Every structure is written in C-alpha cells, then in structure tokens.
Image (cartoon, rainbow, N blue to C red; front, side):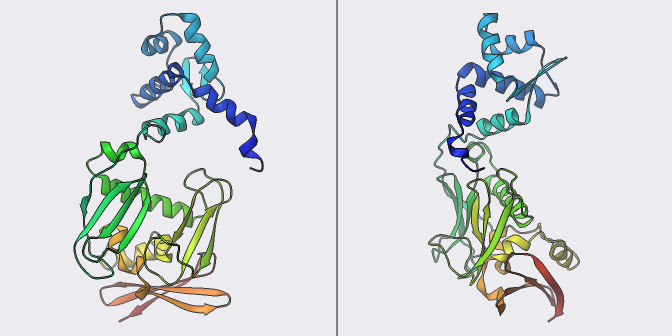
Length: 292
C-alpha cells in the first residue's frame, strides 16, 4: 500500500503486542485453539496467563481485542491477525538467531555429479551446496525456530520451498497473499538458485517477497509435469528440488524465441521428454511429450 511505511496505525499495532502480558495472552489462546478449544472464557484465560489482578489483566486483554482477539459469547479467541502473530512468535522470527551445523543432503551435484551435498542454516536461510566443487545449488528462507527444533530440517525445508514456489507461480505472494508478478531476465544475481541462462524474477507488488528462480522451480508442480512424471514411475515427490537437474541446470533449458521471449524446459523420464514452453511472464503456453 502507498505510504504504508508511514501509517501510524502500523506503529499502533506493534505497540499493542509489545508487552509480555499480551504476548502471554496470544500464546495461551493459540495453545487453547491447538488443543481443540475454539475460545477461552475470561476466567480460564486469566488463570492460564497467571495474572491475579483483574484490572491489570483486563487492561492488557482490551489492548488486543479487535485487532488480535475476538470477544465472543463463549469467550476469547485469536483473530486471523492474532494467529499470524502467534505463528511468527512460534517460528522464532523475532527472537531466535540460530547458527545451525552442516547436514548431509541427499542427491548429486548438477555441476560435477558428485554425491557430496551438504546443507547449512545461516542468516535465516537454508543453503544446499556441493562439498566437492563448491557449487551452491539452491538456497531459500526458512523460519529460525523450526530450524533448531526439527530433526527433519531438510524435508521441512523442501516442503516449505515447494509451497513458496507454487504460490509464486500462481501469482500469489507466499508471504502476504498479495499479487505476485514474474518477469524474465538473462541476468544472474551474485548469489542465486541454479545455473541457468534465464530465470524469472518473481516479486510481490506489496511486500518484500521476491526471488530469482529458474523456470523449473516454477513449473515443478504444474499438472502436466506432475502427470508426465507420475505415469513414468518418476513421482515428482521422490526427489528434492536440489536433486532435479532439469529444474536447476542450463542443459535442460532452451531459448526458443527472443522477442517475445519463449523458453523451453526439457524434463526427462524413462524414454521420453516433456517439453514445457513458458512465456516472459512464466505462464505455461505449450507442453508436448517427445519420445527419445
């Protein structure tokens, strides 16, 4: 939104949750919802928060009612905004700064073919790289809290990244739900996912979300791609994105037309290839199965 950075209402919102008692209320309502209670009565919520002074508790509760908390006949419950705040707190976005150790990652390097991939968590992102040749295959954001709590970090990151890319491909920002646009470029940022001749710069029209992605990242979950791989016993779920050479490496991508730009991605499976043609806005305009 124009001028959103100077909106005093935004500052009021942060002020409303900037108190440990109010954070405790948000946490308790989240815990109740997770345990199957749609709302908590006043007395039960007060007991869980641990405030004996009714006046003090009521003051803090009322600072949240409206924006973050619904007042209902059966008690109090988080609004959608309240749930988002609770999710951000749980994810450790505001509080955690983990420095994770390196993990072995499955798959082979598209650059040298070595099965020596590793992943590390750094600056709120997961990086997957080859220890033999140093090629960085893929990186992407991931919340800091789960990075330290989950023992299946790579599986979680793969699912998170796949959802992020699928929403971006559909034109919806995975961070704020606003419209997302895609423009093709042959420029490669200093640090980017994959090694391709062209990539798509996807960017939210409202918030900070943006990425420079190879076409394969955006078409991975297209129905024709999923069907093609599934019918050839190569399920798209079998391998993580960083182990899909066709999605990340230039050998599988051709420039078909220059003006307007048309790119063709060649996806192999058994004795055939699926040719997926995308336009300059990352829209799939044609698909064809070619026997090899």
